[in-house]
Image: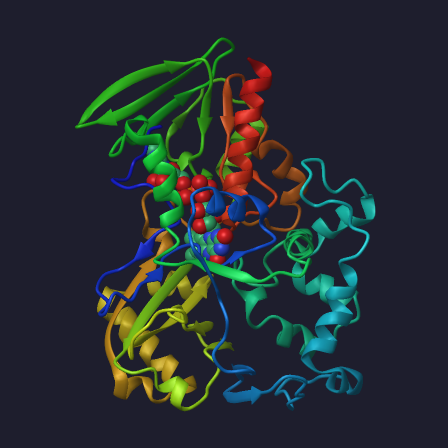
Length: 424
Ligand SMILES: Cc1cc2nc3c(=O)[nH]c(=O)nc-3n(C[C@H](O)[C@H](O)[C@H](O)COP(=O)(O)OP(=O)(O)OC[C@H]3O[C@@H](n4cnc5c(N)ncnc54)[C@H](O)[C@@H]3O)c2cc1C
């Protein structure tokens, strides 16, 4: 295993510095749902203790169109969006069910490689998320409301990505589930894999060239400033396509594979972590997950299960605002985040102690957070992403039905290993 970084885990990485009292947060994967069987299975196999992610205070918090909106279970606030009378009556959960939830039936099995087999489902790839909601009868106001929060954290927002991608992601998370994280940090999972693999992992070993072949494959790796050529019966390329497209791959790749490597987009994600000397949100009984249309997008507490008086509020933003933040200096990112978080949690300024940030676009071994698909790309690119090329096999979240999830990376690894076993 050739790994460019000096550590295992890639996009599963726990940030332990510069926080106090052993507080930690995640740069990548945060939530591990228990309907992700492979993720759960490996956590069990390695004996990693899981802690449920449970909100401290009930209710929902939004900051939209300049207004702070808080409501409890079953509550139906007046939204600053032009909703129809029916939508206003349905409220957020009713709107979600009508336009989204009810569309997730009879889709077949989205985890299978040849999905979708039904042309009516496949047609969803021709429209973006907003067009899909409009086709289901949602008013522009309801689309704007649904576009705040989760739907806004993929690609460049609801209007940018394929409706088929949205539907697949939601359909795969439909079964009732509880969300967990690993006690002590999610990177304990890749570290557990790494300790089993031991010396078979070569760190600080970036691959610079990959060449497929009929009888074997060749890889050139840079080690201590020198290039070394390695050959193997089979090679699994688990490098994100956002990085792979900058390497020397080929010749001999099929044009469709080359196109998939070159064109697959990756979501820009920027995260800013703000440590407070006191969890003032507990005193105020405020929910610690707020969806906003501010440039910081989503604010939440990643330290829910961690002891001590201090806590962290995190901003998680994606798309154009994430790219804007990536261009800022580290201190500027923190000041910028504070200037918006205080719209929702005004006490943050009084309690703020120190901060940190992670912008995935500038990570040289990721160049983005996770794969997404523009309308049309699930038909044009998806069938070619995971397909082997001679003795080259492809793994990673992008080569799975769960892009953006740890489960996807694991499932793709199992699939690639099976391909080799079958070929042998
Ligand atoms: C911001 C963010 C939030 C996320 N949230 C969640 C979540 O809540 N729940 C969840 O389950 N998942 C989440 N994920 C997704 C999850 O982290 C990824 O799907 C998963 O880690 C991807 O694994 P991978 O093996 O495909 O890629 P990676 O983890 O990126 O592994 C690829 C490896 O290849 C190495 N590499 C790259 N280039 C080279 C090269 N030239 N030579 C050698 N090595 C190279 C990299 O260093 C890396 O170690 C999130 C990811 C991000 C970024």
